Length: 429
Ligand code: AMP
Image (tube, rainbow, N blue to C red; front, side, top):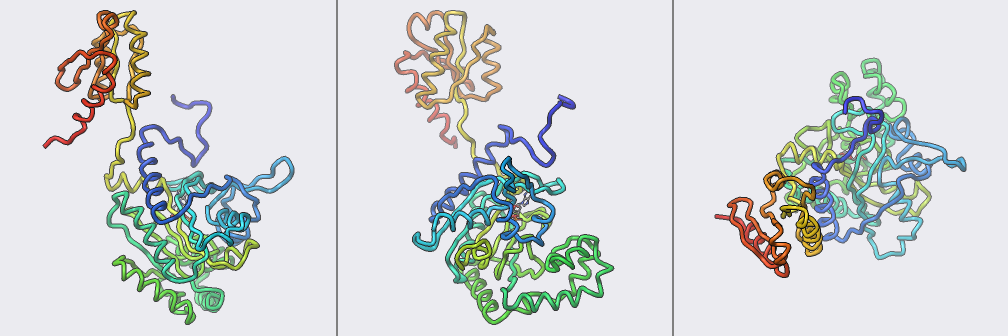
């Protein structure tokens, strides 16, 4: 309908049945890959105390400064719709004393996120992420494990030619020194930066590095890099991560310009780019060794990733990967006349409870019209019930492709149909 009174809010979208197959595909693949690797599913509330994100994601991040859906509830508590998944998982870790669980703690989530961003291709105000956190492991193999997991999901989905971008952001020892260098370098160029970057220069100079504006790109190209300023420990950690990746034959590109939008990262940082390029990272993650402490918990390191589900689905479409078919009707039950209609209804319910997908049109349409509906649905079989069949307790099974028909007693109908469907599903040479 043109101009309906109500529409989905800007930056959100309905997911209609035609899309559902992709969502199930991503969900099932994610569940399988994570489950096999020992990651347990966690679900956290859709809203959290605002301060959790202010402290966790960081006050200078774009998310906290401009993008949060923050509101007061009726008791005057400041709450925020979850803009990202990591801080809530860390909050849950502390709250449930997961420190006393067998280590390391491995958690996975499939959740909606909310950011007040300018909607554009691949960017929504409500989007979904799959993500994982490996908590309690400082060693570089954990970084590699998380990267390999993310890549395995893409691979199991059938995506190809993706590009893994890697960087290290150092830690609290070496990063401040580098930031000083960066600010010193950017200072004289301030006037030539885009408006956003002039602000970033003051609040969070690292973010200037991943600006996509042409005029900033030229300046960034010459800037000092964190990789050249890593302290001995961070350098050693990064080197080992690369060695583990090499061991697994994982191809990567070292990219000192990726910094990502969240303030909590330390050391390893990565993004996975799809065919649409750097503008639309399919996912990314890294290490956040200080996040747990920052939100009032123990000093426990963690590494994880998050990937946008909508972007994954767009990439699947771009690469022409089709999701496997889900459950759907396989039999159309047609009736000839009033007395047959009730019987048809009973047969549909019977087939459904036997695990056979069945539908029928129980109106007074002609048999021709009903078979046309069956054709449109693409079902391989139809069941036809006339007065005679009602009387005899039988049904006609019709092969929709060949038109061949066979009569079966109702007591064996489900069994016969299942056999025919099995034969129809077998690949023909
Ligand atoms: P981030 O939490 O910013 O590290 O984002 C992780 C992933 O979520 C990104 O790589 C995107 O695939 C996806 N993503 C982030 N923001 C949005 C958005 N506004 N709309 C759709 N997907 C998004």
